Length: 394
Image 1 (spheres, one colour):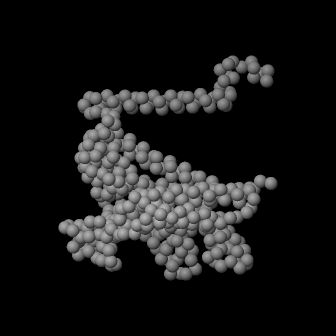
Image 2: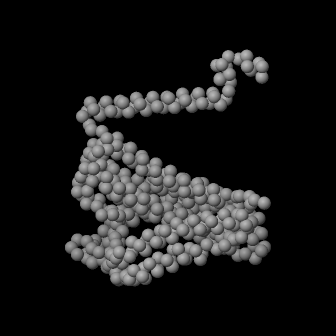
Image 3: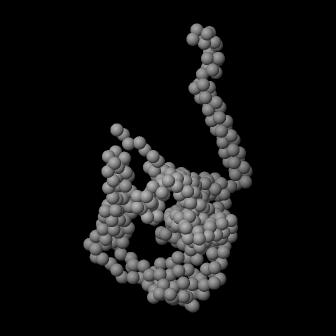
């Protein structure tokens, strides 16, 4: 201690790991800040030299272009801000529906891959090898060509069941007519989903503390079905259908799934489902064979063993790589521009071409996908932590 006190102040600072760490962090921060300042300054000077306006004020200007598919009301005379928001909603819709279907497909493919049935196992293996080794963009082109070249035109639409029509313009099918109560039914359903998730977390914590296991099924049925049905019933129980009608060059009424959306969904789901299937297979095989033998010795069937014993344990191996695939599907959805689906990248590209605000458009694209990725990672990491082994307190 006496020897250390004889060192100079600089030596005392340098040989302190904590202070030395702060020093290097400051240097890195200063270097990054300086580099960023230089880049921003040079960019502003170059834009000013070429008389190109910078900033995001263009978002309030009239967009002047149509968007072929929108989840909210949008017209060409609306602002760029609303147009970009429509693109965000379209990307969000693709991400939610695509990941849900890809995970479900991956679970079944992964299970079938390990099936004792030779034909089922080989079909699953062939699908995985085929889908994973064909570039996603080519798959999107293929499915889009199938819908635009093979299916008939509007006037010769296929009508497999009453009210449902299939043509080159897409799939048309009936939906319930607009009524104010449907908004409340959907809001109640979404709220019920959140309540069900919260209840599952509470029941899991209760099981960790007491060892008592309570079923989530009654709560799920109540929140997701009983309450929305009661809202629908007391709201007048509307049940009239809006059936598609052929008029001119296209159908009007009902609901439409465009060829672009269907082709994008098929391409993304089939491609991501193959990777998810391999992840599920690896997760199941990570559970020791003794778990299967012990479960069968207790009289459980193969399906019961898989559902009650093996899959819950394999989740700890499945979730981390599955998170990467969920993120990949979200980012791969930007390939929608190749087949004309108006996702956020497509709308941002149109905005960039019309306004010349290339840097701002790229910043918006990066920001939106960064937000989607970080949000997804947060949710998946929380779920992953909930599945990890925890010791019960005494």
